[in-house]
Image 1 (tube, rainbow, N blue to C red):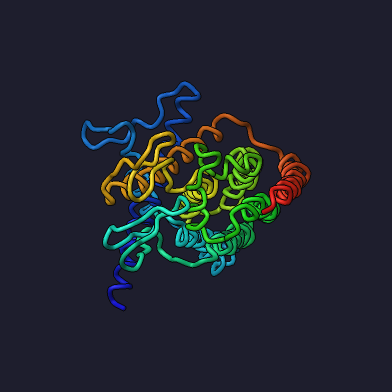
Image 2: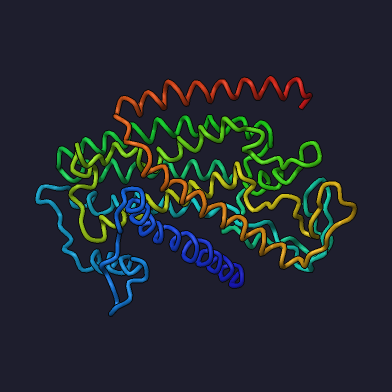
Length: 379
């Protein structure tokens, strides 16, 4: 039992604290640097340690110190209890959702494996799930259940502030997140029909198959429309530009967290960056093969047209798979920042129209077409 608890704590530290939180924190710096590049500015370069500015990275430390020591202001007529817990209600669900995302495949203790139907099979020993915190079979459903709780933090924060601008932001965030959760779920139905499971690791394993002997069966290959629809809906769920109408500083003076300061404000802001990392990990897992590297399996490379296997050490294969997953996630985090500083913000009516009149009908049409194709394919 103690060994199991220790292993779980180690996975939490490795996946959430070392990877997710570091990437989310670096995104606060990358966000400003990318804004500067696209607007022909220098960007963050003032904070320093002596003469060292480290390309603006010292600003991350400066921001942390500022939020720690800044006055924690609470409006006089605010509901102090709900006002205090709202940032945690927004932040905690975003963190919990990472528990079921697989960073790598199971580990075969003795390294003795065979490849059957494009999947690794342990020949000796019990496979160990070292690369995800929890091995719950219904991982995809768990993520939707947890992420849906995040709306409470933002909406309660807007209401508890006793500020009309914050309240409008809270109402907007409720409408936006509930609307796009519906479309997010429907965009994935086609994938569920093809892979036949809600276990995220099994979905990644299924993406290791090859179509026509050379094309990886990644989600983006078998469900290209679903990829674009899900990615758009997921970005809308994070409330990041161009879907940031709950904040909309030009209209609502920062929206639902306008009355927040110090660490409470930092939690709201950091939860959005953490949610962006979660989006990147979900898109990677569902559509980009997760930890899969094309033609790479536990015993080495299986290249099309080449007889035999190019053997590789088992440990090296695992490193390459985990590295592949991390690279895809970081690329998608960068891509989300690129979208933010390229597209203008939607109006409220445009956002609702996009969700209910564009993405939702296309999702339903995608389900219908997928069903017809599978029917005629005999699956």
